[in-house]
View 1 (cartoon, helix red, strand yellow):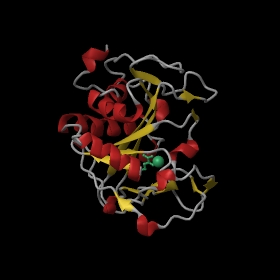
View 2 (cartoon, rainbow, N blue to C red):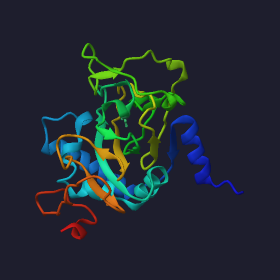
View 3 (tube, rainbow, N blue to C red):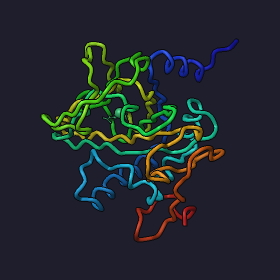
View 4 (cartoon, protein in one colour):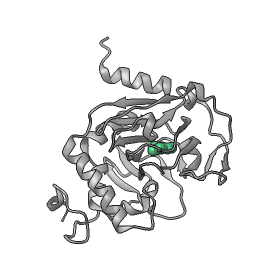
Length: 259
Ligand SMILES: O=C(O)CCC(=O)C(=O)O
Ligand SMILES: [Fe+2]
């Protein structure tokens, strides 16, 4: 049997709970994503860069265009199969010098999903390194059950909570990424990121894809960012796709396809 690059990547993910795909999205689209972050911040001056969140997605044609990109869906399909929906998406853009940390957590502990079949693609918009607060993971920790959460408001942090476990940080791996790289992680992996004390912004886009057999159990239906992106609709109801309106939305290269 020939072991392909994809097999190796899936083996890494099964063993470690994460894997990295390099150079997935090209420079032009990453430049648009970067412009999108600035546009969102100008439109929502009350929001922190770390909180350009999921309730904004379904009304934003560029955001939907980005998470529907075939290259991202092809990666998601390796992990969740051919029937794919968006559950949530969130830019975490840590400004220079003051970007907040994300404390150790497992994503699945926060999510109304049943079963917890879901994969995160984290698309690097900026260079992401230890100095500017890159994502860190504990390889293999995805084998652990979901731990309880505890509130943390004694220090500024993005989530306001963390997993109620002691993490051995000597086991942490820094995920060093360049713009256009995609890191993929499991809902049970313990991960975090440090504050950004550097002069360089650190922005990534989280994208949470579910197989359409995973039910979004939130009371709010359709869930605010539930979008059917590929294949059969399965068990959920979805938001309609947004239409691009000149002057209302950020202009982007494919905007006319969204009118
Ligand atoms: O971007 C970060 O620093 C944290 C990302 C994260 O927690 C996630 O993608 O689930
Ligand atoms: Fe997370």
